Structure formats: C-alpha cells, structure tokens
Image (tube, rainbow, N blue to C red):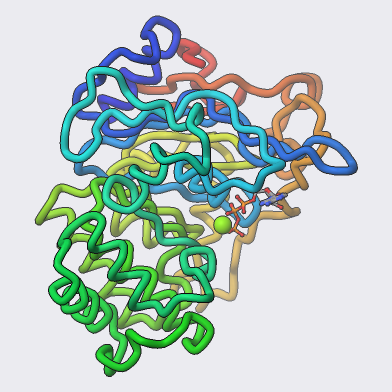
Length: 360
Ligand SMILES: Nc1ncnc2c1ncn2[C@@H]1O[C@H](COP(=O)(O)OP(=O)(O)OP(=O)(O)O)[C@@H](O)[C@H]1O
Ligand SMILES: [Mg+2]
C-alpha cells in the first residue's frame, strides 16, 4: 500500500503528469455520472486508486456499488450518455515507461489511441461475455485478430495460440469450437472464450470483472492459476472485481471496498481482514457464510439494500444501514476519506480515525 498511500496523499500536490514509479495505473477522483430522465445517476462518484506494477488490486462491494462501471471507465466502454470526469492515468505503454502518462478519461472513446491501449496494454474480462465479442465473427477470428495485434503476427501461429488458450480455460475440442460464433456457445463457454482472449494477448494490465462466477469450482481454480501464471511470466498487474471476499483473500495485495460509487475503505489485504475499520467492511466480513455460521444457523446479512444512486442527498450512503450512524453528523454531510493508519484509508466519521489527517 505504500505507493497507494503516497499517491493518494500526493493528490493535492502532484501534478497529473508527475511520474509515480512502481505504479502502472492511477485513478484520481474519477466520476461516471449517467444523465437519466429522472435525474443524475452517480454510478462512480470520486474514485481514487492505484494499481501497482505486478500487483493485484481487488475491488469488492455489493451489487450496484459501481464496480463494473469503474472497470468500463478504465476501458472506456461506457455508454454515450455517460459523463466521465477526473483522471485515469496510464504510466506505461507497450512496456515503456511514459514521460507523460496517458490520461484515459481525456481520450476519444472510439479513437485510435484507446484502441491501441485495449488488448495488449489493458485487457478486460467483462462480467457480460457478449460485451467482449461481436456476434457476427467467429470467436476464433476475434481471438486470432487480438493475438495478431499484440503477440504473434503469423496467422497460423496465432491460430495455434488461440486453440491452446481455449483448451487451457477448459473448452473441450477447441479445434472445432474455435470456428463457432459467440451465440453458438453457452454462457459459461463464452465466459471461458473471453478469458482465453484476454489472457492470450499477454496484457500488462488485466481487469477481471467477476471472471469466475459463471464457472464451476475446478475451472475457477484453473482461471486463477492462469492469471497467476501471467503474473509470474510477464508481471501482469491485475484489477480483480468481485463481491466475494474469499476470492479477494486469495488473489489481492491491496483492496478497495466500494459502496455507492465511492471507495469507503482502501488498504492492504491483511489489514482488511485483520483490522477492518469501516462499518460496511465489517458488515461484509460478518456476512461471509462459513461452515461454523451455517451450523449455528446464523447469517449476519447486511440489513437493508444499497440505495439507488439517483438524486441522493449529501450524506453517508451507508447511513440507513449502519449500526454506528450518528444523527446530526452522518446524515448531514458525506464523510471525507481519512488516513486511519499508515496506508489505511477509511471514509467514515465514526471510526477512531477522527484523529487522523484528512487526505481527500
Ligand atoms: N449503462 C447504464 N446506464 C444507467 N445506469 C447504469 C448503467 N450501468 C450501470 N448503471 C447503474 O450504475 C450503478 C452501478 O452499477 P455497476 O454495474 O457498476 O454495479 P456493480 O457493482 O458492478 O454490481 P454487480 O455486482 O451487480 O455487477 C447501478 O445503480 C446501476 O444500476
Ligand atoms: Mg458488475
């Protein structure tokens, strides 16, 4: 978390083009707002994060808290009515450290620069596999095209790599399946094909949005192994998005807990599990089903639901669900992010952190 901490602290003093060694991607106060009939939907509302080179950053939170929209902001695959602000800085391209980072939020979403970043620099495993594939081309042609752009230009060799990749993610008879169209595959098979496409591009950054939910346990483990192999082979940096804290414990170095479009807790993985500070994180941890809790018939599911992020008042989004909520304080204004311990950021008035220095 050292870099993350420094970088977050640096928000006020560093210019966006300051080079931060050891960081490959950084989000600074990124917002994605959707203009809807009934008002403004703040899907992502001021997210600041860093992805360290070779590291794995887990993003966790309940359904609707803005995880996928955050991923789409980085990949710039947002719908046309989305308004994106803040910075998403890419510090390295094609293996070269950049003198000036590329600010992804400022790129034309259909222009050549973002297209040259997608695939080899940043690859994405979407939560919805159909987002990754065009329905009118065979999966093989799409995977081979991506490989030829980023890894191996020879078509025959690229086809071989694609077939091997499909086999590795558990697709049987990959020589035949490679010539099928996305709609011919089941949902689980499409998910595997998309993972094969993302991994075979040997990306510097992999964004994996709930990559294993549609897969059975054995294939889940295989996919995590493949991602780890990529990390060992080419030092890929990974953003792992999930609502499963077990997966976070297994995969991540640093963790951002998201709630209602904001990061509410941000720290290294050990601190998250051993010293969680935000009431929401604590509630998430209590809600993990364990064999022991099952035996006792006790599940501490978090009461209430995530509010719909439309036209919300300025206050803590967790107010109605929080055991520590204090009327007159938490319902009057949104809590700032504070550094509760070195490198451990928390957005809450009610933790010990009220003594700590405000950082955002
Ligand atoms: N294209 C869109 N247009 C309008 N609203 C959207 C769009 N995509 C997402 N939203 C809204 O933005 C908020 C965040 O959605 P997002 O998909 O990022 O949640 P998530 O954390 O990925 O949830 P899940 O765990 O269910 O995948 C939600 O309230 C959702 O309804
Ligand atoms: Mg999602």
